[in-house]
Amino acid sequence: MKLPHLSAAIMLLALVTLPVAAQQTLTGQDAFTDYTKEHPGVRRKLTVADLPQPYATQSFTNAAGIVPRPDGVWPQAPAGFKVTQYATGFDNPRLMRLAPNGDIFLAESNSGKIKILRGVGADGKASQVEVFATGLNEPFGINFYPSGPKPQWVYVANTDSVVRFPYQNGDLTARGPAQTLAQLPAKGGHRTRDVVFTRDGKHMLVSVGSRSNDDDTDNNPAEVHRADVLEFTPEGTFERVYAYGIRNCVGEAIHPTTGELWCSTNERDALGNNLVPDYITHVQEGGFYGWPWFYMGGIQDPRQVGKHPELKAKVIVPDVLLNPHFASLQLQFYEGTQFPSQYHGRAFAAEHGSWNRDPRGGYEVITVPMTGGKATGEYEDFLTGFVLPDGKVWGRPVGIAVAKDGSLFVSDDGSNTVWHVTYTGGKPVASSGTGRTAASGQ
Image (cartoon, rainbow, N blue to C red; front, side):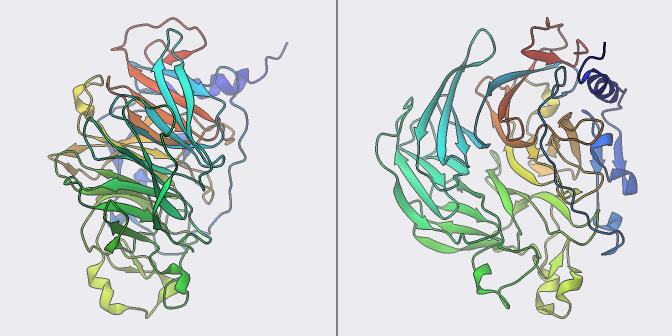
C-alpha cells in the first residue's frame, strides 16, 4: 500500500541529514544557491566580484503555488534544536514583535488585525491567542514606545499610515482607538512598512518600499518618498529622508550595542537568475544605496543608462549580500542565552523565497554572523525544509521574534503557522507530533 507523501518525506529527510561542515564557507560561484542546496549549518559569502553581468541568464516567473504541508515534513534546524508548531490557523501571519512582558504581537496583514500570542502550554502550543486590534489597512510593522519595561503605546505601520494605540503591559486588547500619526505613500508596489525608534527615543524610522521594479522619480512622481527610510518624530511630524535608494527595506532593526539602524532588503528583478542580490546592512544616515540607477557600489542598471552619473560614487555597498530574489523580510538581533554562545549577537532573518528564480531559492531562516557589532559578510542557513524535493512550497518564513527565554519564534504565511525553535543541547525528544529535533533524526 502506498502511503501518501511518504516518499517526499524520506527524500527531504535524506537532504537535511547530509553531513555539513558548519564553519566551511562557500564563496565565489559556489555561494549561489537554490532550495536543493540549503541545509542548516551551510555558510555562504557573496561579494560584488562574484556577480554576473546583467542578462547573463534569463529572468523567470516561477511563483510558488503553496501546497499543504505533507505528513511527516517539518522545518529542519541544526543539531540540538527542537522545532514545534506553536500556533496555526492564522490569516497571513507576518511580522512579529515581542512586548516587554513577553507577549508576541503578530500582524495579520490580510485580515487587518494585530493578534497577541501569550505563553507556552504543556503541549508546546500558545496558551492564549487574542485579537488586540482590528480594522487596520494591511498592517505589518509593530513597535512599542517608549522603549523599556513600561511602554505607553503600541505603534502599527499600515501600508498607508502609522497609527498608535494606548497600551500598558499585559493588555490583550487596545485600550483606545487608533490615533493616526503619519500618512505614507501607498498606491501600488510594495505594501509592507516597518517602524522602529532610535535608541534615544527622539526619532521614528519608517521603511517604505518602491512602487515599481526600476522606475524613478524622474519619470514617476509616485516614487517620491518611496524606496526610502523616512524619519519622523514619535508624534508623527516628518523630519527628513533618513536614507534612500533602498528598494524595499522590509525589516528594520536597531542594533542593541551600536544603536545603528539595520535593514533587510529586497532588491530589483528582471536582470537574471543571479542579479541583483538581496541584502542585509546597517544603514548610514543620509546614505544612498543605488536604486534604481545603480546597485552594489555603483554598478549601472542597464535600464537606467546615462541617468544621474553624479550619484555613482555615492552608492554604498551593503554589509551582507544574500542570494538574489531571496525576499529577505524581518530581521532580529539575538541577545538571548538559550542558544549556543556562537549565536549571541548574530542577526536572524526570514527569507520569504523567490517568485522569479529557477530553481527557486530562499524559503528559510538564516543567521548573520557578527563581530563587534559588524557583519562578517557571511550568512548561514538555520531553518530550512519549507520546499519539497519536487520544488513545491508549503511554507514561507516572514517574521522573527526572540522570546524572553532566548527561544525563537518564526511566522510562516505559507502554512499560516508560528513555529517555535528551542535549543535542547542534543537531548533526545520523544516524537509526539508536536516537535522535531535534529538530534533525534525526526
